[in-house]
Image (cartoon, rainbow, N blue to C red; front, side, top):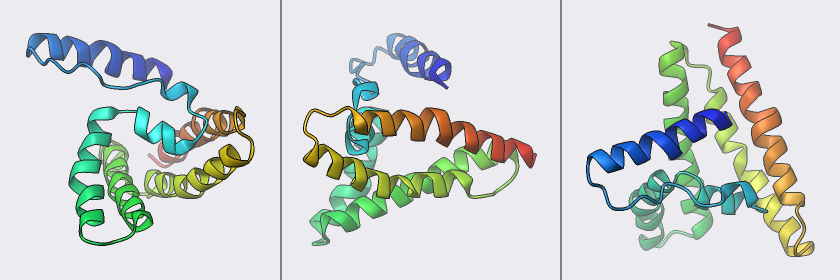
Length: 148
């Protein structure tokens, strides 16, 4: 997973930016230090984050809906695209990626509450690494490929 991150975001996108004379090379920030999942989603994959904010989140907020509704809708759209990105190459729709993304919403609330109570604590970062890199993504990959 981390190798694919390095290959895509650090190498390939910078090569592509160099070839196309694309000036903005900020594809991610220090997501690995996030103590809240909310921060992780803001720091990771900035082109997608910026697109979702511009085309999903802000139009919903500007329409008069609450921020929580806009966050839910943004995660829903992101979850649909994550499911498509996994299920199409695997030739199976099992909704594991979709539900994995939607399960981030309670974790966002949990890590935000922990950060408010335990200022300066790295517990949210530990939850991030366990939920993403140890349990979440490896489990999701195993679930998809066990059925292929």
